[in-house]
Image (cartoon, rainbow, N blue to C red; front, side, top):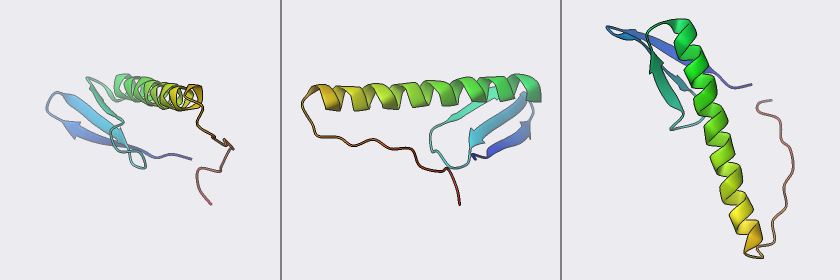
Length: 71
């Protein structure tokens, strides 16, 4: 499980995923910020998958497996 962190600021909220540097966003309300953070995380994961696909296309020997997010 990942952790969303929200901080109230003058213009609304800023938020980030504690465990993944670079996944952050902002919004006027906490609800809007939560939705934006979900989108940011989804885009981050899609971008990482695209990079992995490029590595695989170059003939790199890659092994993929699922891992639990925390123990």
